[in-house]
Length: 118
Image (cartoon, rainbow, N blue to C red; front, side, top):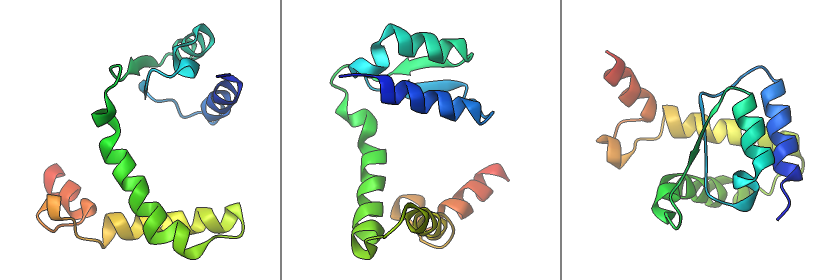
């Protein structure tokens, strides 16, 4: 698998001026290549990789994106990237600010984090 798209995307993301402390990925060939590691470390970012065959590392994010797709994207079939961006922003606002989560004792993530910070 080529890593050109990944490297280009990383370069554009870093050009925004925001830089994470750690970049986590799976062990796909595009993320283990010398060019990728050099670019990430060259930006002063620590490299972190999931263990080989550690499907469980991605369970939460995969579940989140499943919810996004089935509750919003597939239902609305956005016509343009701009509409999709607006729809995703609205969905995540509802998800975080108004939708109670059973794993958070039926609080919203916004409520949970506010309580944790207090």
